[in-house]
Image 1 (spheres, rainbow, N blue to C red):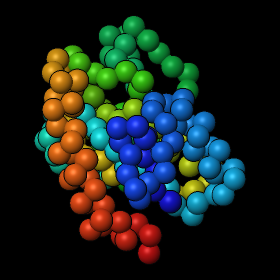
Image 2 (image 1 turned 120 degrees about the vertical axis):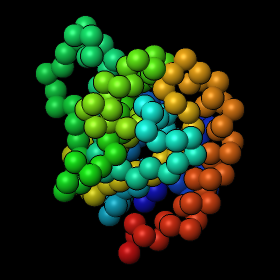
Image 3 (image 1 turned 180 degrees about the vertical axis):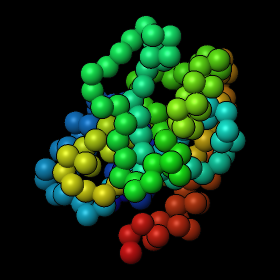
Length: 179
């Protein structure tokens, strides 16, 4: 089953689950309780910490939930903040999820040092819910912006084209996940 955030990131081929960590977790849990899918594929946009270029397509089975304060020792967490359905995380593009968008380019190097390449607000909760229900899961993302001071304006400027690219990509490749 294919899911997306919804609102400005809606697709005819995907069911919306909400924006951010909380809405997506609640609504995906609801779907899994009522009619558990055999596979969960989440599609959406992502911001790049610097290595992925705008309009690149990213596949991932791994997500983190790291807040920017972690890198300045201004925050810690007692919870496991990495989840993966991949066998070899070292080959994965790890997607960071937070309810906040990174706009400080200096922080990007810290994410890259941890092997985290892009950020998407929902993916961590999607993988956590999938793990809880024992459902294999993955994600496909199109990069709309870099995580810097222009993140929001670049996202807005590139969003329409990015959505076309992702729709086209999915129409060509979706069968790969549902064999």
